[in-house]
Image (cartoon, rainbow, N blue to C red; front, side, top):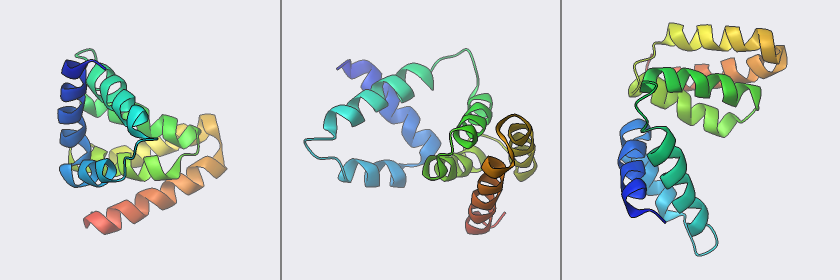
Amino acid sequence: MNKGLFDLGEKTRREILGSKHVEKSAAAVDEFSLPFRELVTQYCWGEIWSRPGLDRRTRSIINLALLTALNRPVELKLHIRAAITNNGLTKEDVREVLLQTMIYCGVPAAVDSFRIAQEVFKEEGK
């Protein structure tokens, strides 16, 4: 494990997803899942999300589209919340991303994604 990238990843992850989520996730780690958490934190959050090539807003847009395409509702909900609370997206931005994704990924994927977005907006008072 690269301790520097792990620490950077942990910092970035907290800034984007919030400390509450990161602490809850860390508390669920056991001996089996520890290597996975270390790799995700180092690679995803330290190596990719921390790169200077794209800002966090743009990375959020990409994530919302990809998570819709892959039909990953749990991660999508998490990233919609991060997009609107920490990465500068508006409710309207999220809608446009989901509409764009619908054209290329299909209506069923968008139906679920719109439903999830509405849940997040309600929970966040948006």
